[in-house]
Image (cartoon, rainbow, N blue to C red; front, side, top):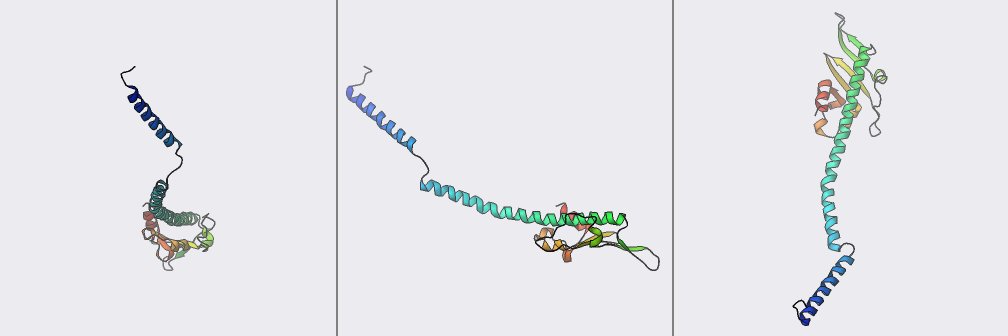
Length: 168
């Protein structure tokens, strides 16, 4: 035949039979072992432990920046109201020069939209121009959590502080 004795052919054929049975058994294996499942769960837990605090920080920063954007909108509304003559001017009694311009909440409501209550705290806002410096008073500034964005002490922030924080 092919140079093998009948005894050697049986061993070869028997070896192939065992190999074929092993391959067939491996193909029929379905699912994951308990150790494989535990390894996947541990990997997912590690990823979650890293991702959850990072996402929480991103959400907090987004809320803080939204409050600063509201303050920026209030400032823009105050400038429009001032240009339209809707704000109250304070003048020096001696020489009748304008020393300050005050834009109250009632005046600004007509110029500013979508400044909503934050966490059920009613919003109150106004703006003032004094010595060529705009200052926004906005109750939402007290809700800022991140020190990086917390320039608005006493719910007040100047135009330059606001621009600096929004450009970060």
